[in-house]
Length: 141
Image (cartoon, rainbow, N blue to C red; front, top):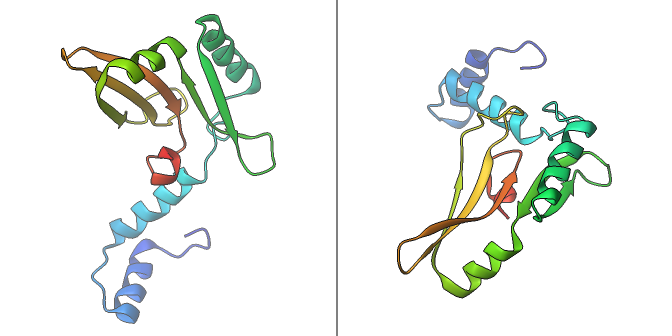
């Protein structure tokens, strides 16, 4: 698509060559998904000052965090943060663990991963959160 080939033309070639029934909108979605998967937080507009502000707020709340960088660069790929006391609480009382992504509706258009736990008394509490580049299995791991 970068070379000016339209998704309809790509769908036609794929359908003829492989005997599939792919639609142009499917090709377009694949391209958009691949673009999102290659994005980093820095690509999405999270500058060093904004990331430092986020991390200082996480630290101010006595939470812990980890940053994953792209390859051997200093470009942030994702930020994972948690409250140690909530993690201990989950280890002791958790009956059910839920992992869910919110839609990319934050400033940086990244999914927000939320990990919550439910106790045997049906109380739910937040354990950890992460800003991740996509809702893929790799991001989840």
